[in-house]
Image (tube, rainbow, N blue to C red; front, side):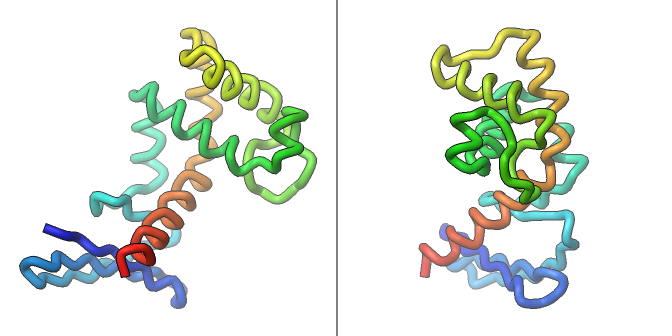
Length: 145
């Protein structure tokens, strides 16, 4: 069974087309600007992302790494925010969150205290994580066609 997900982002409210090719079933769902669809067809929003981050250590690590990846290369090296572009960590979080990402890359874990801080801080980046989800699904659709 193959599932194709397409985003129509030209309109003010994105429409999601989910097509099960084997059964030729098509469904149209209207998402608001604070929702995104993941690869499995689940709808995510602020509450769901924050709930996941509150209960899942791996989600915290993945989320933290995704936000870190949005930093410019020089911001990653300097562990500070240099470009005020609303992407990546805020100036207040850049040093500590970048150090957590680097620590995890080097040792493969965070201490319980580090995880607690990372969990609290990562939750405020829900919108960037949602944006990444949208971009991934659009790219997945382009690669299928």
